[in-house]
Image (cartoon, rainbow, N blue to C red; front, side):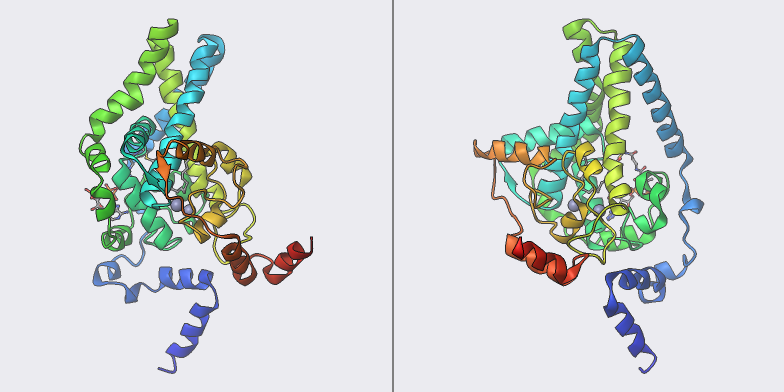
Length: 340
Ligand code: ST9
Ligand code: ZN
Ligand code: ZN
Protein backbone atom coordinates (compact mmCIF):
# COMPACT_ATOMS: atom_id res chain seq x y z
CA UNK A 1 0.00 0.00 0.00
CA UNK A 2 2.98 2.28 0.52
CA UNK A 3 3.63 2.14 -3.21
CA UNK A 4 0.13 3.31 -3.99
CA UNK A 5 0.04 6.35 -1.75
CA UNK A 6 2.15 8.77 -3.79
CA UNK A 7 0.23 7.78 -6.91
CA UNK A 8 -3.04 8.83 -5.33
CA UNK A 9 -1.54 12.16 -4.35
CA UNK A 10 -0.34 12.84 -7.87
CA UNK A 11 -3.75 12.03 -9.28
CA UNK A 12 -5.40 14.42 -6.87
CA UNK A 13 -2.97 17.14 -7.89
CA UNK A 14 -4.61 18.10 -11.17
CA UNK A 15 -7.03 16.97 -13.80
CA UNK A 16 -4.20 16.78 -16.29
CA UNK A 17 -2.31 14.17 -14.31
CA UNK A 18 -5.61 12.46 -13.70
CA UNK A 19 -6.22 12.26 -17.40
CA UNK A 20 -2.71 11.00 -18.04
CA UNK A 21 -3.16 8.36 -15.36
CA UNK A 22 -6.46 7.34 -16.92
CA UNK A 23 -4.80 7.01 -20.30
CA UNK A 24 -1.73 5.19 -19.10
CA UNK A 25 -3.23 3.00 -16.44
CA UNK A 26 -4.90 0.47 -18.67
CA UNK A 27 -4.39 -2.45 -16.31
CA UNK A 28 -7.06 -1.06 -14.03
CA UNK A 29 -9.72 -0.94 -16.72
CA UNK A 30 -10.56 -4.35 -18.19
CA UNK A 31 -9.22 -7.55 -19.70
CA UNK A 32 -10.41 -6.42 -23.09
CA UNK A 33 -8.22 -3.35 -22.87
CA UNK A 34 -5.24 -5.35 -21.60
CA UNK A 35 -4.74 -6.85 -25.04
CA UNK A 36 -4.53 -3.50 -26.84
CA UNK A 37 -1.99 -1.65 -24.70
CA UNK A 38 -0.34 -0.26 -27.81
CA UNK A 39 -3.57 1.03 -29.35
CA UNK A 40 -2.72 3.49 -32.07
CA UNK A 41 -5.32 5.13 -34.33
CA UNK A 42 -2.95 4.78 -37.29
CA UNK A 43 -3.38 1.01 -37.12
CA UNK A 44 -7.14 1.35 -37.53
CA UNK A 45 -7.57 3.71 -40.44
CA UNK A 46 -10.70 3.31 -42.56
CA UNK A 47 -9.51 4.28 -46.03
CA UNK A 48 -13.02 4.58 -47.39
CA UNK A 49 -13.71 7.43 -44.93
CA UNK A 50 -10.39 9.10 -45.83
CA UNK A 51 -11.32 8.86 -49.49
CA UNK A 52 -14.77 10.45 -48.96
CA UNK A 53 -13.42 13.31 -46.86
CA UNK A 54 -10.70 14.07 -49.44
CA UNK A 55 -13.30 13.97 -52.22
CA UNK A 56 -15.57 16.28 -50.19
CA UNK A 57 -12.80 18.88 -49.88
CA UNK A 58 -11.93 18.69 -53.57
CA UNK A 59 -15.62 19.03 -54.41
CA UNK A 60 -15.88 22.03 -52.10
CA UNK A 61 -13.00 23.77 -53.89
CA UNK A 62 -14.82 23.15 -57.14
CA UNK A 63 -18.01 24.56 -55.55
CA UNK A 64 -16.07 27.68 -54.54
CA UNK A 65 -14.82 28.01 -58.12
CA UNK A 66 -18.38 27.71 -59.47
CA UNK A 67 -19.64 30.30 -56.95
CA UNK A 68 -17.21 32.83 -58.32
CA UNK A 69 -17.27 32.10 -62.04
CA UNK A 70 -20.57 30.50 -62.88
CA UNK A 71 -23.40 30.64 -60.34
CA UNK A 72 -25.85 33.33 -59.27
CA UNK A 73 -24.96 35.23 -56.10
CA UNK A 74 -28.34 34.06 -54.80
CA UNK A 75 -27.12 30.48 -54.81
CA UNK A 76 -24.11 31.39 -52.70
CA UNK A 77 -26.31 33.39 -50.30
CA UNK A 78 -28.62 30.40 -50.06
CA UNK A 79 -25.63 28.17 -49.24
CA UNK A 80 -24.67 30.52 -46.40
CA UNK A 81 -28.24 30.36 -45.11
CA UNK A 82 -28.25 26.55 -45.32
CA UNK A 83 -24.94 26.41 -43.45
CA UNK A 84 -26.43 28.44 -40.60
CA UNK A 85 -29.67 26.49 -40.59
CA UNK A 86 -27.85 23.16 -40.47
CA UNK A 87 -25.59 24.28 -37.64
CA UNK A 88 -28.56 25.60 -35.67
CA UNK A 89 -29.77 21.99 -35.61
CA UNK A 90 -26.41 21.05 -34.12
CA UNK A 91 -25.97 23.87 -31.59
CA UNK A 92 -29.56 24.38 -30.39
CA UNK A 93 -30.70 20.85 -31.18
CA UNK A 94 -28.44 17.89 -30.67
CA UNK A 95 -25.97 19.84 -28.55
CA UNK A 96 -27.76 22.11 -26.09
CA UNK A 97 -31.12 20.34 -26.07
CA UNK A 98 -30.56 16.62 -26.58
CA UNK A 99 -26.99 16.07 -25.33
CA UNK A 100 -27.13 18.42 -22.35
CA UNK A 101 -30.82 18.96 -21.60
CA UNK A 102 -29.93 22.60 -21.02
CA UNK A 103 -33.51 23.64 -21.83
CA UNK A 104 -36.79 22.14 -22.96
CA UNK A 105 -38.44 22.42 -26.38
CA UNK A 106 -42.03 21.91 -27.49
CA UNK A 107 -42.82 19.28 -30.10
CA UNK A 108 -42.88 21.58 -33.19
CA UNK A 109 -39.47 23.01 -32.31
CA UNK A 110 -38.06 19.52 -31.76
CA UNK A 111 -39.31 18.47 -35.19
CA UNK A 112 -37.71 21.55 -36.75
CA UNK A 113 -34.42 20.86 -34.93
CA UNK A 114 -34.47 17.25 -36.10
CA UNK A 115 -35.01 18.49 -39.67
CA UNK A 116 -32.00 20.82 -39.31
CA UNK A 117 -29.97 17.90 -37.99
CA UNK A 118 -30.71 15.90 -41.09
CA UNK A 119 -29.78 18.93 -43.22
CA UNK A 120 -26.43 18.97 -41.40
CA UNK A 121 -25.66 15.25 -41.94
CA UNK A 122 -23.51 14.85 -38.82
CA UNK A 123 -24.80 11.41 -37.83
CA UNK A 124 -28.17 10.78 -36.21
CA UNK A 125 -29.20 12.77 -33.15
CA UNK A 126 -28.78 9.63 -31.06
CA UNK A 127 -25.26 8.84 -32.26
CA UNK A 128 -24.11 12.46 -32.02
CA UNK A 129 -25.46 12.83 -28.47
CA UNK A 130 -23.92 9.53 -27.33
CA UNK A 131 -20.49 10.53 -28.68
CA UNK A 132 -20.91 13.94 -27.10
CA UNK A 133 -21.87 12.65 -23.67
CA UNK A 134 -18.78 10.42 -23.51
CA UNK A 135 -16.73 13.34 -24.77
CA UNK A 136 -17.82 15.39 -21.75
CA UNK A 137 -17.73 12.65 -19.17
CA UNK A 138 -14.29 11.31 -20.13
CA UNK A 139 -12.69 14.33 -21.80
CA UNK A 140 -9.19 13.61 -23.09
CA UNK A 141 -9.07 9.97 -22.09
CA UNK A 142 -9.22 6.90 -24.34
CA UNK A 143 -12.98 6.82 -23.78
CA UNK A 144 -13.31 10.26 -25.40
CA UNK A 145 -13.99 9.66 -29.12
CA UNK A 146 -12.47 13.08 -29.84
CA UNK A 147 -9.46 12.75 -27.54
CA UNK A 148 -7.55 15.97 -28.28
CA UNK A 149 -4.38 14.70 -26.57
CA UNK A 150 -3.87 12.82 -29.85
CA UNK A 151 -3.33 16.14 -31.60
CA UNK A 152 -5.08 18.73 -33.73
CA UNK A 153 -5.61 16.51 -36.74
CA UNK A 154 -7.07 13.59 -34.81
CA UNK A 155 -9.59 15.73 -32.93
CA UNK A 156 -10.47 17.69 -36.07
CA UNK A 157 -11.21 14.93 -38.57
CA UNK A 158 -8.87 12.00 -37.86
CA UNK A 159 -11.30 10.49 -35.35
CA UNK A 160 -13.85 10.07 -38.16
CA UNK A 161 -11.31 8.21 -40.29
CA UNK A 162 -10.45 5.34 -37.96
CA UNK A 163 -12.10 2.83 -35.66
CA UNK A 164 -13.02 4.13 -32.23
CA UNK A 165 -10.89 3.10 -29.27
CA UNK A 166 -12.54 0.10 -27.54
CA UNK A 167 -12.91 2.21 -24.38
CA UNK A 168 -15.30 4.53 -26.22
CA UNK A 169 -17.65 1.64 -26.87
CA UNK A 170 -17.10 -0.13 -23.56
CA UNK A 171 -17.48 2.89 -21.30
CA UNK A 172 -19.84 4.79 -23.60
CA UNK A 173 -22.07 1.72 -23.70
CA UNK A 174 -22.77 2.24 -20.01
CA UNK A 175 -24.21 5.71 -20.53
CA UNK A 176 -27.91 6.11 -20.00
CA UNK A 177 -29.38 7.25 -23.31
CA UNK A 178 -32.96 6.28 -22.50
CA UNK A 179 -34.06 9.89 -22.01
CA UNK A 180 -33.38 10.81 -25.59
CA UNK A 181 -34.55 7.56 -27.17
CA UNK A 182 -37.85 8.08 -25.38
CA UNK A 183 -38.30 11.24 -27.39
CA UNK A 184 -40.26 10.07 -30.46
CA UNK A 185 -38.60 12.78 -32.55
CA UNK A 186 -35.14 11.31 -31.85
CA UNK A 187 -36.41 7.78 -32.28
CA UNK A 188 -37.89 8.39 -35.73
CA UNK A 189 -34.98 10.52 -36.92
CA UNK A 190 -32.71 7.56 -36.08
CA UNK A 191 -35.04 5.03 -37.67
CA UNK A 192 -35.36 6.99 -40.93
CA UNK A 193 -31.93 8.59 -40.86
CA UNK A 194 -30.76 7.63 -44.34
CA UNK A 195 -33.88 8.76 -46.27
CA UNK A 196 -34.06 11.91 -44.13
CA UNK A 197 -30.47 12.80 -45.09
CA UNK A 198 -31.07 12.14 -48.77
CA UNK A 199 -34.08 14.46 -48.74
CA UNK A 200 -33.06 17.19 -46.25
CA UNK A 201 -29.28 17.27 -46.78
CA UNK A 202 -29.09 16.72 -50.56
CA UNK A 203 -32.39 16.98 -52.46
CA UNK A 204 -34.07 20.04 -50.93
CA UNK A 205 -30.96 22.32 -51.04
CA UNK A 206 -30.28 21.24 -54.64
CA UNK A 207 -33.88 21.81 -55.67
CA UNK A 208 -34.50 25.29 -54.20
CA UNK A 209 -31.97 27.35 -56.24
CA UNK A 210 -32.96 25.49 -59.41
CA UNK A 211 -36.71 25.95 -58.87
CA UNK A 212 -36.78 29.52 -57.55
CA UNK A 213 -34.11 31.32 -59.56
CA UNK A 214 -33.22 28.98 -62.36
CA UNK A 215 -29.79 27.90 -61.12
CA UNK A 216 -28.39 24.78 -62.78
CA UNK A 217 -28.77 21.62 -60.72
CA UNK A 218 -25.02 21.08 -61.08
CA UNK A 219 -24.17 24.49 -59.54
CA UNK A 220 -26.84 24.08 -56.86
CA UNK A 221 -25.45 20.74 -55.78
CA UNK A 222 -21.80 21.75 -55.63
CA UNK A 223 -22.48 25.05 -53.84
CA UNK A 224 -25.50 24.50 -51.58
CA UNK A 225 -24.63 20.91 -50.71
CA UNK A 226 -20.94 20.09 -51.17
CA UNK A 227 -19.31 23.46 -50.42
CA UNK A 228 -21.81 24.28 -47.67
CA UNK A 229 -21.35 20.85 -46.02
CA UNK A 230 -17.56 21.02 -46.12
CA UNK A 231 -17.58 24.47 -44.52
CA UNK A 232 -20.12 23.49 -41.84
CA UNK A 233 -18.22 20.33 -40.93
CA UNK A 234 -14.93 22.19 -40.56
CA UNK A 235 -16.63 24.84 -38.40
CA UNK A 236 -18.00 22.10 -36.15
CA UNK A 237 -14.72 20.20 -36.04
CA UNK A 238 -12.88 23.36 -34.96
CA UNK A 239 -14.75 23.16 -31.66
CA UNK A 240 -13.03 19.82 -31.05
CA UNK A 241 -9.61 20.80 -32.37
CA UNK A 242 -8.90 24.55 -32.05
CA UNK A 243 -11.20 25.18 -29.07
CA UNK A 244 -9.51 22.31 -27.23
CA UNK A 245 -6.11 23.96 -27.73
CA UNK A 246 -6.07 27.71 -28.28
CA UNK A 247 -7.56 30.35 -25.99
CA UNK A 248 -7.92 31.40 -22.36
CA UNK A 249 -9.03 29.15 -19.54
CA UNK A 250 -10.68 31.54 -17.08
CA UNK A 251 -13.02 28.99 -15.49
CA UNK A 252 -10.86 25.89 -15.19
CA UNK A 253 -7.15 26.07 -15.91
CA UNK A 254 -6.80 22.28 -15.51
CA UNK A 255 -8.72 21.32 -18.63
CA UNK A 256 -7.77 21.70 -22.28
CA UNK A 257 -11.00 23.31 -23.60
CA UNK A 258 -10.49 27.05 -24.09
CA UNK A 259 -12.37 30.26 -24.91
CA UNK A 260 -12.02 30.75 -28.65
CA UNK A 261 -13.82 33.71 -30.25
CA UNK A 262 -13.03 32.72 -33.84
CA UNK A 263 -14.61 29.34 -33.31
CA UNK A 264 -17.64 31.00 -31.67
CA UNK A 265 -18.16 33.13 -34.75
CA UNK A 266 -17.98 30.14 -37.10
CA UNK A 267 -19.95 27.76 -34.88
CA UNK A 268 -22.89 30.02 -33.95
CA UNK A 269 -21.70 30.67 -30.39
CA UNK A 270 -20.09 27.37 -29.43
CA UNK A 271 -16.48 28.48 -28.99
CA UNK A 272 -16.68 29.39 -25.29
CA UNK A 273 -15.44 25.92 -24.65
CA UNK A 274 -13.71 26.38 -21.29
CA UNK A 275 -16.99 27.73 -19.92
CA UNK A 276 -18.95 24.98 -21.61
CA UNK A 277 -16.88 22.12 -20.21
CA UNK A 278 -17.05 23.74 -16.76
CA UNK A 279 -20.83 24.41 -16.86
CA UNK A 280 -22.16 21.96 -19.48
CA UNK A 281 -25.78 22.43 -18.36
CA UNK A 282 -25.84 26.15 -19.27
CA UNK A 283 -28.22 26.71 -22.22
CA UNK A 284 -26.12 29.60 -23.53
CA UNK A 285 -22.70 27.84 -23.38
CA UNK A 286 -21.25 31.19 -22.26
CA UNK A 287 -21.71 33.86 -19.61
CA UNK A 288 -21.75 36.65 -22.20
CA UNK A 289 -25.36 36.57 -23.39
CA UNK A 290 -25.65 37.57 -27.04
CA UNK A 291 -21.95 38.27 -27.62
CA UNK A 292 -21.11 36.18 -30.74
CA UNK A 293 -23.85 33.73 -29.89
CA UNK A 294 -26.62 33.59 -32.51
CA UNK A 295 -27.91 30.35 -31.06
CA UNK A 296 -28.73 32.02 -27.74
CA UNK A 297 -30.40 34.95 -29.50
CA UNK A 298 -32.68 32.62 -31.43
CA UNK A 299 -33.48 30.46 -28.40
CA UNK A 300 -34.45 33.55 -26.40
CA UNK A 301 -36.60 34.70 -29.31
CA UNK A 302 -38.31 31.29 -29.51
CA UNK A 303 -38.99 31.41 -25.79
CA UNK A 304 -41.27 34.41 -26.41
CA UNK A 305 -43.65 31.97 -28.10
CA UNK A 306 -43.16 29.28 -25.46
CA UNK A 307 -41.43 26.99 -27.97
CA UNK A 308 -38.25 26.89 -25.87
CA UNK A 309 -38.44 27.09 -22.07
CA UNK A 310 -36.87 25.85 -18.83
CA UNK A 311 -33.48 27.43 -19.58
CA UNK A 312 -30.78 26.31 -17.16
CA UNK A 313 -27.96 28.72 -16.39
CA UNK A 314 -24.89 29.02 -14.19
CA UNK A 315 -25.48 31.89 -11.74
CA UNK A 316 -22.94 34.75 -11.50
CA UNK A 317 -22.12 33.54 -7.98
CA UNK A 318 -21.36 30.02 -9.18
CA UNK A 319 -19.17 31.38 -11.96
CA UNK A 320 -17.27 33.69 -9.63
CA UNK A 321 -16.68 31.00 -7.04
CA UNK A 322 -15.48 28.57 -9.67
CA UNK A 323 -13.14 31.12 -11.24
CA UNK A 324 -11.61 31.82 -7.86
CA UNK A 325 -11.10 28.13 -7.21
CA UNK A 326 -9.88 26.77 -10.55
CA UNK A 327 -9.62 29.73 -12.95
CA UNK A 328 -6.53 30.65 -14.91
CA UNK A 329 -5.48 33.40 -12.54
CA UNK A 330 -7.25 32.19 -9.44
CA UNK A 331 -8.16 34.82 -6.85
CA UNK A 332 -6.38 37.83 -8.28
CA UNK A 333 -8.60 38.32 -11.32
CA UNK A 334 -11.83 37.87 -9.41
CA UNK A 335 -10.73 40.40 -6.78
CA UNK A 336 -9.73 42.92 -9.42
CA UNK A 337 -13.17 42.61 -10.96
CA UNK A 338 -14.76 43.37 -7.62
CA UNK A 339 -13.02 46.71 -7.35
CA UNK A 340 -13.70 47.78 -10.92
C1 ST9 B 1 -19.53 14.42 -38.18
C2 ST9 B 1 -19.84 14.48 -36.76
O1 ST9 B 1 -18.81 15.16 -38.74
C3 ST9 B 1 -19.30 15.72 -36.17
C4 ST9 B 1 -19.55 15.68 -34.74
C5 ST9 B 1 -18.85 16.78 -34.08
C6 ST9 B 1 -18.98 16.63 -32.65
C7 ST9 B 1 -18.69 17.93 -32.01
C8 ST9 B 1 -18.77 17.75 -30.57
C9 ST9 B 1 -18.07 18.78 -29.81
C10 ST9 B 1 -18.68 20.07 -29.94
C11 ST9 B 1 -18.86 20.76 -28.68
C12 ST9 B 1 -20.03 21.57 -28.70
C13 ST9 B 1 -20.19 22.38 -29.90
C14 ST9 B 1 -21.34 21.97 -30.73
C15 ST9 B 1 -21.08 22.01 -32.15
C16 ST9 B 1 -21.10 23.32 -32.78
C17 ST9 B 1 -21.31 23.21 -34.19
C18 ST9 B 1 -21.42 24.52 -34.87
N1 ST9 B 1 -20.81 5.16 -26.89
O2 ST9 B 1 -19.36 4.41 -34.87
P1 ST9 B 1 -19.18 2.94 -35.01
C19 ST9 B 1 -20.62 1.34 -30.28
S1 ST9 B 1 -20.30 13.17 -38.99
C20 ST9 B 1 -21.22 3.90 -26.80
O3 ST9 B 1 -19.49 2.35 -36.35
P2 ST9 B 1 -16.42 2.23 -35.41
C21 ST9 B 1 -22.07 1.09 -30.61
O4 ST9 B 1 -22.47 -0.16 -30.13
C22 ST9 B 1 -19.87 13.32 -40.64
N2 ST9 B 1 -21.11 3.01 -27.77
O5 ST9 B 1 -17.71 2.56 -34.53
C23 ST9 B 1 -22.03 1.12 -32.11
O6 ST9 B 1 -23.10 0.47 -32.69
P3 ST9 B 1 -24.53 1.24 -32.84
C24 ST9 B 1 -20.66 12.33 -41.42
C25 ST9 B 1 -20.58 3.40 -28.93
O7 ST9 B 1 -16.62 0.99 -36.18
C26 ST9 B 1 -20.72 0.42 -32.42
O8 ST9 B 1 -19.86 0.85 -31.37
N3 ST9 B 1 -20.58 11.01 -40.86
C27 ST9 B 1 -20.15 4.72 -29.11
O9 ST9 B 1 -15.26 2.28 -34.49
C28 ST9 B 1 -20.13 0.78 -33.77
O10 ST9 B 1 -20.05 2.22 -33.89
C29 ST9 B 1 -19.57 10.20 -41.16
O11 ST9 B 1 -18.71 10.52 -41.94
C30 ST9 B 1 -20.28 5.61 -28.04
N4 ST9 B 1 -19.88 6.89 -28.13
O12 ST9 B 1 -16.36 3.41 -36.49
C31 ST9 B 1 -19.59 8.88 -40.45
N5 ST9 B 1 -19.68 4.84 -30.35
O13 ST9 B 1 -24.25 2.58 -33.46
C32 ST9 B 1 -18.31 8.79 -39.76
C33 ST9 B 1 -19.82 3.64 -30.92
O14 ST9 B 1 -25.31 0.35 -33.73
N6 ST9 B 1 -18.28 7.75 -38.78
N7 ST9 B 1 -20.35 2.75 -30.05
O15 ST9 B 1 -25.08 1.36 -31.45
C34 ST9 B 1 -17.83 6.50 -39.00
O16 ST9 B 1 -17.54 6.12 -40.12
C35 ST9 B 1 -17.63 5.62 -37.80
O17 ST9 B 1 -18.48 6.02 -36.76
C36 ST9 B 1 -16.16 5.65 -37.31
C37 ST9 B 1 -16.00 4.71 -36.11
C38 ST9 B 1 -15.24 5.20 -38.42
C39 ST9 B 1 -15.77 7.05 -36.85
ZN1 ZN C 1 -15.17 19.65 -25.96
ZN1 ZN D 1 -21.24 19.90 -24.92
